[in-house]
Image (cartoon, rainbow, N blue to C red; front, side, top):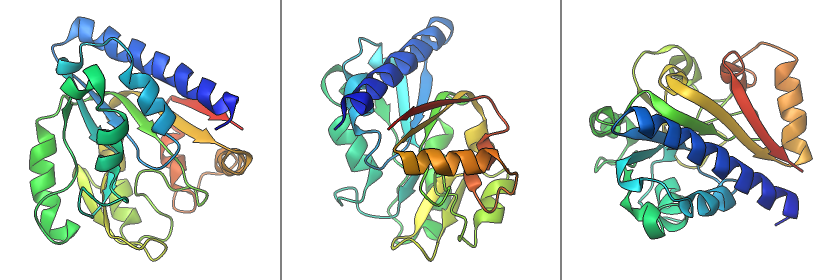
Length: 221
């Protein structure tokens, strides 16, 4: 990994730790919403090393593939192996999966288990794909319109470009946070973001749903 990406991960971890600490000074519990994929791994490791009151921190995911938690495609597995380590293992992690065989059948159970989290979140950390998707708000998903407009917290998603069905927090639930951060790397992602900033069709590039709120962008080549 490049030195720039490592430095970015450390700067992001510092900013998130400071935000969580500020909110912990004012309230008993705080919530951090993270995203999966390969980009956040160095950030997870850097954040796990921070001296926080981890037992008072709730952590959940912005979205998840509807796979077994032991699957290499599981965002929950990624979080457990890279963030919930050392002192950070004391955090309360609530995954976005249930016993049901499909996300459509499981969405009510996941809504119930995430309702007790410390909303509104202190920080939501979003990623972005080359197609402009964020969380599981995909431009080619039949459920995109619903995920962008519903007041329900979670939406089951199927999308032709993705092999697994998914579950995602809705745009409105992700908007309910004190701070929003976009964590991306690479020139291709920078170009997608520049394109997103130059237009307003949210269905074409769903990351635009978050460009209307204050969004801190952490980018490295």
